[in-house]
Length: 412
Image (tube, rainbow, N blue to C red; front, side, top):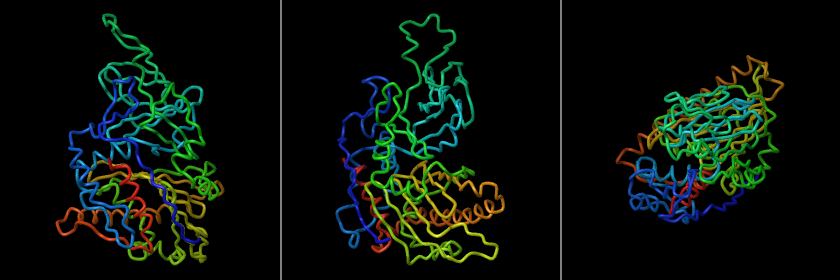
C-alpha cells in the first residue's frame, strides 16, 4: 500500500470560559473548561504552545516533557480530550443479554452501561442522586441498581423506583431524581460513550453519524478488513503501567520503528520493509505484510497481513490472521495508565485451545516488552536531561499526526 496523508484535524469551537454541558440535568449545571480542578488554565495553555503543529515533520520537535508529566496539563487533557466526543469504553460482549451491565471510570467520571428489559443499551453516571455513593461495581447482571448506602433503587432505564423514608421531604419530585444519562452508542463490537453531548430522553444515537464522528472516512476500510461483530470474544487482560497514557500511544504509533529492536520474536513474523501508514481525520492505519513461513506445527497467528488502527485519542484495533485485539488506554494520572486488551477470534478456531493459548502467550510476551519500554520512557521524561525529541519522518508520521490532533483539542 502506498503511503498517503490525509489530515483534517478537528478544531474545537470552545473558548475559554464558555460553559460545557457534561450531561447534568439542567441549564445551571454546567462546568467551564478547566473548572474540574483548580489548575491555572493560563499555565496549561503555555504548556500546550510549547508544541507547534505547523512545522513540517522533517523539522518538528516532539511535545515537551511537561505534556507527559505536568498535573495541570493532565487535567486539561481530561476536560478537552476525554470529556468530549465519542470514547470507546467496552465491548458488546459485556452486554449480550438484557440486565447485563458493566461499570468503568474515565477521568473523574464514573459510569455504568447496561442493557434494559427491552434490549436497549443505556448508560448513566454511576452515582446515586441522594448522597453520591457509587451504585454498581464490576460487571454482571442486575434487574435494578440499589444504592449500597441508603437503598435508593433505580431501574435499568435510570428512573428512581424507590427512595426510603422520605416522607418529610418537601419539594421532591421522583422524576427529577433519576440517574443522569450519558449518550451511548455501539459500532461493531465496541461500546462508546459521549460525555459532552446532551442526551435527550436517552434517544439512540444514529449509527451512521457515530461512525462519521468517531472514525471518519476510515470506517469502511475497517469494516472491509474484518473489524466487525462476526468474531467470537475470547478474553480480556488488563495492565496497569507506570507511564503517561500518551507514552503508550506514542509507542504504538512509531511505524514499527522499535519492533526489530524490542520485539525480535514479533519482527521475525513481519516483513517490516512493507510497512505503510495512512492518516485519516482522527485516525491512522498502519499495515504490514506477514512472513509467509509457518512453523513446523502449522501455527500461524499473524496471517498474511497485519493492520494496526489507532482511533484518536486512546483506542487501538489490531487485525491479524484470525485474530483481532483491541487496546484501550485509560489515563489514571500524569504518570500512570491502564491498558485494557480484549481478544476476538474467528469462529472456526474458537475451540482450538492449544492455538488460543499459544497465541495469547505470544501476545503477552509483546505486551511485557512494551511495558518495560514505556515505563523506561516515563522515567526518562522525568529526567532533567530531556526536554524535547525529534521525529523520524519516514516512520513516525502517525505519531506526529496524534500530537497535532492533541494540540488542536487542547489549544484555546
